[in-house]
Length: 118
Image (cartoon, rainbow, N blue to C red; front, side, top):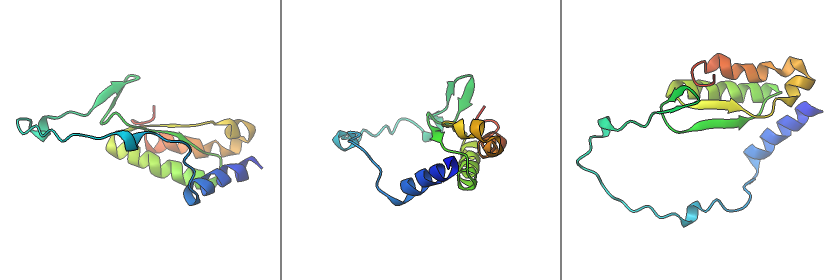
């Protein structure tokens, strides 16, 4: 039951328009202000957060788990996080508590992103 609900969430998010409300990004207008005196190679986007060094102030978060599909998604996202030096965390792990055999769908994050997820 809980696994089918998790797969339903993945299917709905991938097949339907699930946005709710307005994030107000359509109200933001960026004014181009070139900085020719700055060399792009001198720009450092890295940050330190939670005793971790990340390449960008960007974190993949609240990912699901508990099913084969979720495990594949988590593994792929974790590989990307590791490659690009960004953080990643998973969302609710209740399914792994109720059904310990599904814990692997969450563990793949730490296995595939050892420096980005711990």
